[in-house]
Image (cartoon, rainbow, N blue to C red; front, side, top):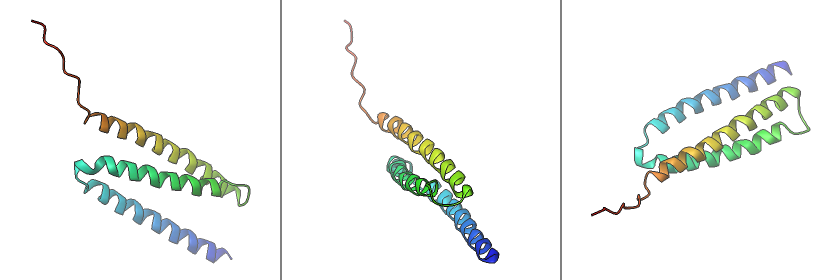
Length: 104
């Protein structure tokens, strides 16, 4: 039983590191015009991560999975709220500013 759980852990860790590397290169290769939609998609993915983290932190399971589930909920929540703030700021740059009247 011990060998099986360590194999699952190594596979999960490998997938995590590969996802981090691929995600890094994908984000840095996106043109600046597409960063706002990318932020929206990232927020959607983080909401799916929150659902998984809540399931991991649920009543069933080990204490370790509960701890990682709670950490996942906190970090994904920070990511979502920070993403909404950054997206709002990026979109506000494209709004037209009101014209000021010249005094004669």
